Image (cartoon, rainbow, N blue to C red; front, side, top):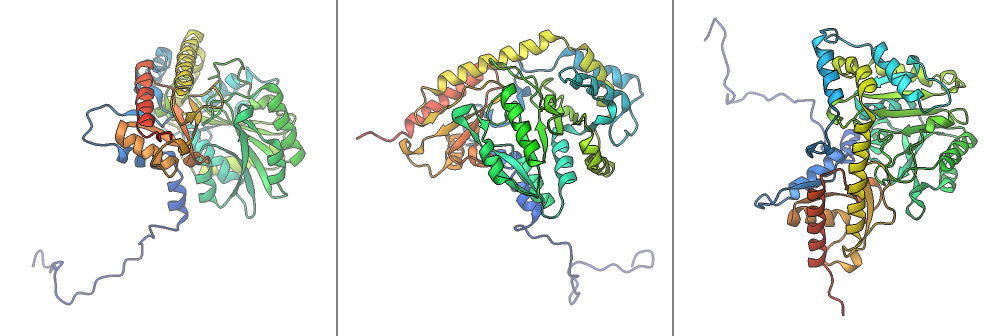
Length: 434
């Protein structure tokens, strides 16, 4: 007895245990299905395959975060902008649901530099990274019976979000023999009266492709013909280091309505700052008339938003970062891509059909017929992680079985070392020729 109240022990005989009603099934739920499709889930599996007793460093070529390498760091101007924003003490409160006006104005001006028309702050919705931009767009477009067209290979977050939102996804092919261009005939064959949008990722993740003006124009004409909007995933905007310049899909906004998804994560190398955007590139007002803008705003009203001090820093980040910084990053990516493309040619069982021209990735094809002991690309990648402590992304996670995605945004010595390990691995597992 304590304070006049009796206390029962957990082991009291005859006590009836309550029936807890919040138990969740571990399989078969939308959440489980969506979570299993994530890059993080696959990287977790690869990491768990690494031999913990190995003394060699683990080389991460499976994710899109280059900041672990000292050579891939953000611009000093960006760091100063965040510090200055914090010290003003003007950005410690809540943000508006679509972002602070000064930050949206800066993003609108930044994107308008490459467009034949001007965006206004009302065309911009700030998000917590490009991941939330994808989440908002998929949720805003989801309605009973609707479907969306996604690239194969592609970024698995789209499949995860469509699964969670009950929006059917249909996959069109990207053609490696044509620089991973969109197979427009397959797009037309897949679309029907319930198709609402097509996703175009340029520069390409996972392929490292950069689309030409003509090909982007063809995509826009196809979208117009089908009566669908274009979701332009341009998180790797301006990271084009080959012969083709980056051209935003919004250039063709008068042909078909375009919703651009972007962020400061990749160009400024600050993925942890979580500042992205949705931009409605729609000079004819088609999206507004269809109430898509309203759906985006409605979802933003019940969601989170980027840290206000990062929003406060955006105008200074955009205005003050020097072109020399961007050129340096492009040189680093170009040199890494050149090294990777050259070294891959000497690795048994791996071919690269198209030299990367943009983003931070390349897709390579695995010829498991000349290697011993692997049933598929996941088996290959997990065994590679175990034996060589090198992580590469299995193509199955991206929609392409028996392919793999390799990140080359890493310092050259580490990249060269990892490629030597992959070569040794493939030589060791190579079938003996009769």
